[in-house]
Length: 166
Image: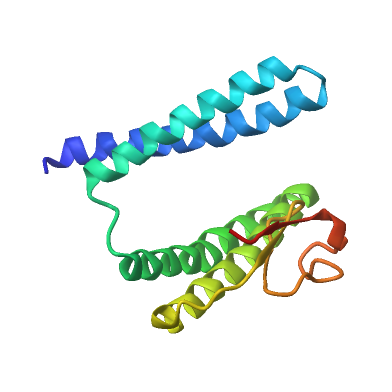
């Protein structure tokens, strides 16, 4: 594939992914403010943006076997936690931005748990171990199996977790 086309597809994917997330957050805000139809509009357009992003990934041929996708996801989470977020933490410390420091440090810690979950899945790949995951709605921490009484990253109570069992 031509390198300029590859870069354009990568930019399109990143743009679509960012738009989908932003629109989902906007939908939550509209819902909180009582604008149900606008929230629905934001959600439907976010879904459409996800379709665009997925198409770009397919054209890029970035979707491999599940085993390869697990390995790539593990490496990505590890890199983000060890390099990017560590750098962001230091930047926030240098300028004394406590709010960003908390966000970056908690996100780094959560990214490390994501890497561990991917590693565990790779180690048990052929077993197809079934588990239930619980996601902290405050910081994004993922608990494997048992719902904690409190989030080990941000301290949120178990009522602030969402369960994924499908």
